[in-house]
Length: 210
Image 1 (cartoon, rainbow, N blue to C red):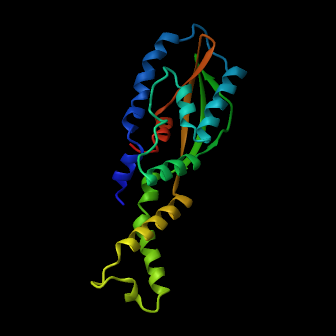
Image 2: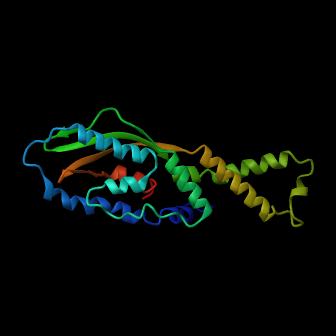
Image 3: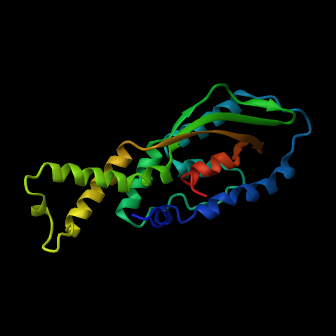
C-alpha cells in the first residue's frame, strides 16, 4: 500500500486546513481589547468545549468553534473503505491532557494542552513488515508451503489481499502515536467565544500530515 495514495484519499483538504491560520489571523486586529484581559469562567468553559470536541474526534464541532468560521471540509468522508477505517481510527486515537485552565498573557487569553494521536505515516509504514510476518506465520503453519502458492510459485493475489487487510487492521488496532503541545487563543466578540488555533492544532485536524 502506498502511503501517499492512501493519505491523499483520506485528507484531500489538508492544504485548505493548513491555510486556516492565515485566514483567521486577519481578523485578530479587528477585535483587540482596549484593556488587559483576565481569564473568566466563560472563557475556561469554552476552552473545555473545544478540547472536548477535539478529544472526541468531532472535528466538525471544532471547526465550528474556530474564529472567522473557516470552511475546512472536515465533515467530508474519505472515498475508500480503507480511508474510512483509517480516518475513524485516527479520530479515536486522540487523547487530550490539560495541565491548567486558560491563562492570560497581556491582552490575550490562551489555552494549552498536550494531545496524543496516531502517527499516520509511521503507522502505515509498518504494513509491509506486518504483512511479511503474517505470511511467514501462515507458511509455518502449513506442512506443504508450496500448497499455498500458484503454479508459478507466486503468492496468489487473494492471499496478498487477505494479508494486507489483516496487516492494516492490526496496524490500526496498535497504532504508532505522537504527542504534541497545542496552544490556541480565545477571542470574545459580541458575547461569543472563538478559538484561534496554532499550527500544531491545525496539524492534528489535518491528520498530522503536511
